[in-house]
Length: 424
Image (cartoon, rainbow, N blue to C red; front, side, top):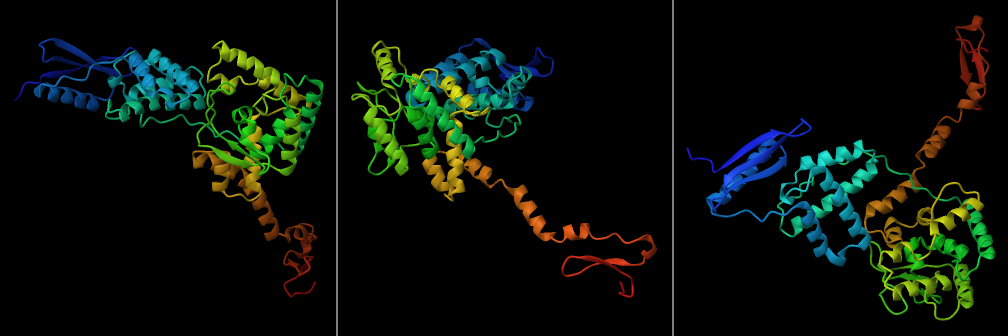
């Protein structure tokens, strides 16, 4: 029997609910090594032992160890501009949280058990199931990059179960709420200094018509609007002397239609705007401020998504309050527009293209909301099937001395009591 070059050892973990495995062996340089495998199933630990032993038999040394923190920094550096700056920050923050729970171990020794332990820890700390699902998705994405770069054979969190969480409701505004919102926005604009405040009434109307996202609207240039064709084209923006860098979310550029009335409103708005200001909805005062920030190196790509208009959400809340609307946000205008497209008979592919969705599942959620009238349709079907129930319910109840008879319902729906001989 051949002597094992690598010994598998184990010891109870600190929580007492699992075991931590180690590999003891002498490497090709004659140095004694102890390699931690972390928490995992014994069968998988044995496979890891056999793998290292095969490498020793072939004279192959294992890949250079790299701590999780180093692995994350290297992965995000290589990814570069392929992901948003804000997304990179989120990934880095999530991985720091992951490392604080499972330890700054060798990234090749991360196991499914580590992911499950982290998932339960987050839930125990009060994180919502949706938040935990988002964190797990980001961690999986980091390891998937290592798989694509041939640094890992498989994603250790590929098969981790996500916490069960109810699907959030798609909130939309009613027609009456939209009218009240536009009216409140017009009143707000009449009281404000428009050099520093954007045209809220026009912004809301364009959002309801086009379904554009907040960032798409605020980074819209006059050159993106074709007033003759009555369309808006959504395209990424370069960092130039007069414009700042901004990229579209999910999809490539797309074109959405405008109505004739809305086109005329945009023409009137353009006539009131001073020359030299390329953005449709950015007030002149705010544009000048942003240009000063850019000149001083204090404007980042992330700012083009969140800080184009200062105190945006706070100002919108004032308008909603004035309109008597207790619930809602700006993105609900987009949701309302998408649902309206479905109600008007547009196909799912058409809506997906207009909305700029990358995944069909996202568009389908809006379709299901519009089609979610099963209760009303069931009530209507039942009423038609039982249209005689009302007259039967109001039919006279037979007296006790005629218990051998029965109630007869005639063609007109009127109930009458007859005995067994058919006589009333």
